[in-house]
Structure formats: structure tokens, C-alpha cells
Image (tube, rainbow, N blue to C red; front, side):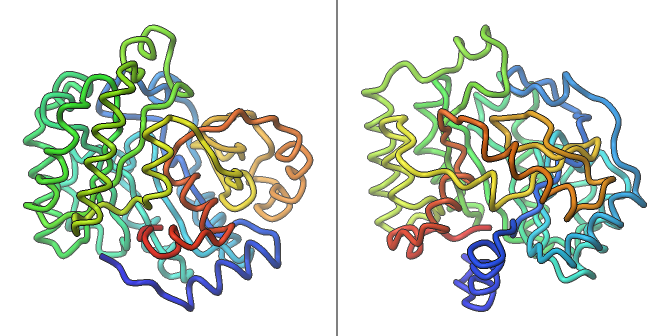
Length: 320
């Protein structure tokens, strides 16, 4: 597990708390996907994508603006042939690089990812991955194994739903066997239609509390669960008890180059073609005017708690 880096932490705090600028550039690099997951809307809304030169300019502007982390995600980044060049450019600009993938193409392309620092692979259990994502779980697991053999530290991210409550503890054991880290977050309604939400939303709250209680005990026993206990306790009640700073500390850029407030609040607030810094500054009134009911996306919760210097989270959350 990556150790705490005080220099990066100091740089992040200076950027976010003093300069009032985001430290993470979260880039939905493509809306194309090789899967058709019913709980995801990104592949349904496939449209224009930023060109390679436009992304390269954005990364140059990101470094000048003080951004420290570049995260490529949605819908399946490995479908972009220019991904290695983009990661290489981000690395050359001094950014920490991160990638979120469904893992299906990982075995084929992992050797091209030498400029990647953080690799996150979605996996919700063998039965659930097969049923919901429509893919043989062995393809995902073999991709994770290939990434490990190539020297990458891998984070398996599991979305907890009504479908996989009985698989959750087993995924922790699987992560341990594979030498991977593991994170959890509950399914959220923001990216799916009503039918999918009714099918997947967590209804058995008693069972959920039991499962999360097991995760907390496993974490305390040394299991490679990166979530903080503070966050896991929020999951157990499905109550977002935190002040969200996601709209201010993370810059969200969609595949077409438009700025969005966050995953939950998708309204357009600007466009990087205006200049990344200029678009961010102009978006401030729109970002602050949004009334958010809260979510439990772990990246938003954990990073907001880090921003607020919550001691337990500072001690236990270990990812970017």
C-alpha cells in the first residue's frame, strides 16, 4: 500500500485551501464502452470526444494551474488508442496519473501503461460481474493478474448493491490472494434509469450493516481495504454525513471537454476550450449555486474528509 507522502499532501493542501483551486483533474476521457452495464449512463450518451492535441493542451494548462493528479476514466479509457501518449504527456507535465477501467482490455494493453501510477479495476464479485456487466469475470481477473505481473499496484473497486451483498466478504479474500488493494462504495442512483435503480438499490439494510461490520473488522485485522472506517460507517447507514467539497477540489471534464460540477450533478459549467483556468474561475458561481442532496461516491467522501483534516481518515485512507 502506498505510503503517505508529506510533500504531495502539502502541495495538495496549498493548492486547495490557499489557492482555492482543484488538485485533481478527473477526465471522462471517452463515453464509448465495450460493455453495456445497466447501471451506467455514459455509454448510452456517447458523443464527441476531445482530440489528442486538445487533451495535450489541457494537460499543459493543468500543470500551470497547479493540478497535481490526472485521472482518466469513463466509460472505458482503454478504448482510446492514444491513452499511452496521453498518460505519458501527463507524466511529463509532472502529474500523478490514474486510470479507472473495467479490466476487460487490461491484459492486452497493460504493457503500454508504463506512465501509470494508480490503476483501479471495477469488479463486483464473480456472479455479479457476469450477470450485471455481461462479461466473464475470468477476463477481468486475468487482466488484474497481468497488471500485477507488469509491476502495477492494483485497486479493485467493488460497488455494493442488493445483488452482491453475499459476495462482498469473498472479494476481500480474492484481493488478498491477488496481492491487490480493495475499495467499496454503495450503488448510487445518479447514473441509471428508474428500472435499474429499483433492481439494484440496497433494500436489506440489516444485511448491509452486517456486511459493512465485517469489512470494518477485516480492515482492523489488516485486510487491504483502503476505505477509512469513517466512510465505511457511512455506508452501513447509507447516510452521507460529511460536507462535500468535490465541486471545489476536483475538476471534472467530460469527454467532449465541458466542465461538470461532479458525477451526481452533471450540469455544464464551462468548457476547457475557453482555457482551463479561465473556465474554472468562470464556473465558480454555478458550482456554488447547486443544492446537492449528497452522495456516497467514495472518492468524493474520502477526499472531502481529507480536505477537512479528519484524523481517522488521514490515518487510514490510502489512495488518490
